[in-house]
Length: 318
Ligand code: NAD
Image: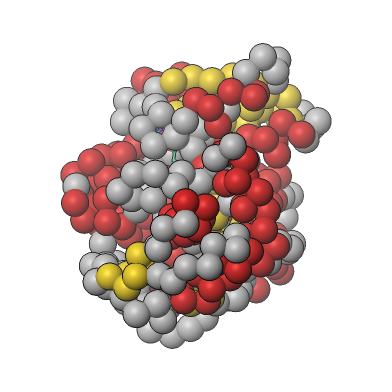
């Protein structure tokens, strides 16, 4: 039996992870720490009342809150952060405070509470300007945004906490995760929710640049799978590592819109806008490390994931 703290558990990936953890009867307690900055109470409302679930509303920038949240926990899955490259370019100070200071606070709390393992959300943005494809974990480039710096610093701190204090860690470099509960609103929404919103409202989506940029879009269940494998693996060689969490397939923005346009029967064309600052042209992961050390499968491919996500977005508009 184990007790798991999910920071950022009211967010998109975090709330999907909480749902999966609560289905696992070997998990005794799932505690969420979230300040609802970009997450929503409605994402966790269905778990309230479950005696194995606790919600602590609070900010990871406050060390005492982090210590309180980590108290009695066996494992931590640290998902809380301010996501989005453009957000970090507009306001690097807040992204730095939440993503670096907040994560450092969580690591200090994990160490003091003798947590068995600290799994955390890293990012494909850490590959920065490295040119080779597919991306392999040990070949990173220079970060291209404050957000990418914060995620790289998290990895550096995880290594230091392991060497200096013996805290076990696993970092998960997510590549463009999508699926149910991903927010389609606000200035920093991700491309797939924006495309679904546009298709459902029958409004032309804006594609930044000519649409040839491509990404390794990853259905959220694959990210959840990677977290669960990382939290509970007993293989010693699998810990104190970072892993790519992706599908290992590349889809251009034009192909993505064509597919979403088709499955929603929207029958509209996109508008092409300016290319965005800090955007890399292509992203594709080599997922063989996670496959061999964590037994990660990435079993939901992009088309199946998009069909599942569509059902969720449709239900939201009813
Ligand atoms: P999200 O915004 O839906 O979730 C983040 C959660 O953290 C939110 O619930 C938010 O309220 C919470 N949070 C933010 N600041 C906080 C603070 N100061 N104290 C406590 N809680 C705070 O985003 P997501 O897409 O679910 O991302 C989860 C993690 O994965 C983040 O660390 C993000 O950087 C990382 N990541 C996501 C993707 C992706 O494609 N979605 C890609 C790479 C990395």
